[in-house]
Each structure stands twice: as structure tokens, then as C-alpha cells.
Image 1 (cartoon, rainbow, N blue to C red):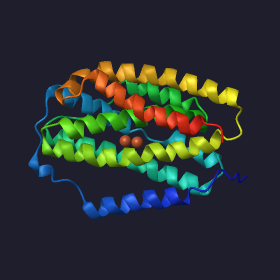
Image 2 (image 1 turned 120 degrees about the horizontal axis):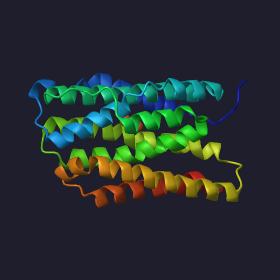
Image 3 (image 1 turned 180 degrees about the vertical axis):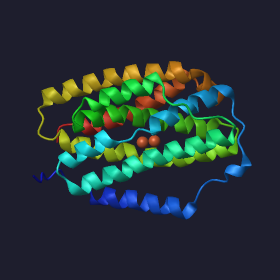
Length: 237
Ligand SMILES: [Fe+2]
Ligand SMILES: [Fe+2]
């Protein structure tokens, strides 16, 4: 069955272009090594686990949605998130630290996402994307280590594309919903965001402070990015 869910050709080209650029640039110079605060190491280890999801459930749901171009783009998106995990793994290695096998926040997040349909999974995934935006920006701008700043900058550049990519898919999937259900979705979404920001701010507060970002400033940045997304997705056409 083919369902027309909108044209994602421009996004497919965007992800293909980013992959090409990545190949052209090659890797950062890992031999420089990295000196990272222990709190930042622990924090990056948890983000590394989060980036390393297998993406199989999301890919399967995108396939079921029946839009071939979108499904193909989702595969490139999943590959990009895996690339983030690889970069963070190499950065940790350069700092003499190992990756960790798992963390409860990630396990809970993955379990929740598996239970959901594509649209709801994207709603939940968006929480991680806006949190990632603020997190990698804080690390890029505040960390003293140049290798860590480079890795955070590379990941941030991708996360800045991931947010509008998911937003476009979500906007389409909420087309035709009543004003009432959009309002309900927005309210529930904010509630989930509040929970996610609180967990991350508490769990990573120490590391964030180490790169010069207070918990409040971090939460404020997430909220600002999220506000635009919610307005775009749930606004009636
Ligand atoms: Fe990522
Ligand atoms: Fe992302």
C-alpha cells in the first residue's frame, strides 16, 4: 500500500549531501588526544549510549508508512545518529575513557519509543533532539578541549537539521486534526518535555556547569527551541 505522506525528496537530498560532506571532511584528528573533566566524561558516555540506538523500530515504522522517499531518508537519519555515537566513542577514547554499555535513562526512552506508532515515536524523539541541540551547543561553546569542541560542533550541525526534518513529518501527520486535539497534543508534549528537561538537567547538571552553562540556562534554551517546534506542528493550517 502506498500512502502519500508528502514529498521528502528535498530532505533526502539534504541527508545525502551531509553524508557526502562527512566523507569529504574525514575524521577529526584523534591523535591530538582530549583532556576532559570527569563529569563531562560521564555525561558524554550517557549521550553516546543515547546516540547509539539501533533505529530498527523507527525504520520499520517508516517503511510501514508507505512513503519510500521518507523511509529512505529515515535510514540516513539513523545512520547519522550512529555516526554521532561513533564520534563520541572516539572522543572518549581520545580522552582515555571507555564507552558504557547502557544507562537507565536511555533504556527507558528506547522502551517507550518501541511501544509507539510512527507519529508518537517522532513526538518522543523530538524531545531528545531539542535536548541534544542545547546540550551540544553548550559543550561546543564552553568546553576548553579543542577536540571535544570540534566533535560537539559537528554533531550540533546535524541536530540543527534533525529538528526541522522531524517537524516537517509531524506537521504533515497532524494535518486534518481538530483544533481540540492539537491543543491536547501540545499540552501533553509540553508535559513530556518538562519531564525530559528535568531528568537531563539533574543528570548532567555537573557537566553542564563545567562548560559554563547553568541548569536554568540549559532548560531555557531547550524550551525556546521546543516552543517553535510545538507552534509549527500543532498550528492549524
Ligand atoms: Fe544525535
Ligand atoms: Fe538527532
